[in-house]
Image (tube, rainbow, N blue to C red):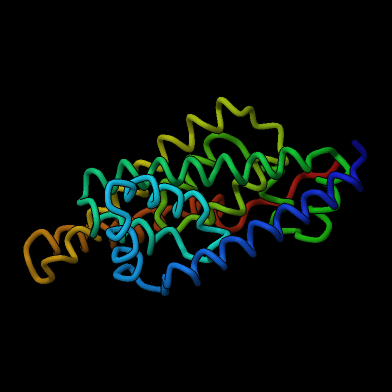
Length: 223
């Protein structure tokens, strides 16, 4: 299969997923709020956990950020189960993105992506299990960009899965316990969860090397 044909298939698949995601969101009446997500998931009864995992896994196609969805998971299922279901969904999102990039793959496709999106090109060059882990573990890390970059890079699937699985538990816990605490705003649990989330967002940024690695990856060195 030549690169042009792969690109056409990829574009058709991407458009189909985006259209399908927006149709689902409109049909379900999901708005840009954790309460809206909670209400719809609760309506699904015993299928709620699977529906929620699917929402997180397809978050890029329904245009809802992980912070909102993971917080909603805490509202619906509580901190522990919200963390579990949210992390499974993040792994699904990561594998989907990684698979799309790897399927499009090839040096020619990678070169075209890097030329059109220089920042993504730098992520591709610096991609590795550590970057994947740090990006998903940090609550505001640019996950989607790094997942695409990992798919275009030489990162092995097994290493990618380990990094994503570990990092997703950390990110999911930060937002799920915060979301669970929203049921009792002003309580000690709410303040503990809120302060913990703020610290998780602020403290890592005190390290200049981490800031650079996450948000301003160095351009590849040329001879």
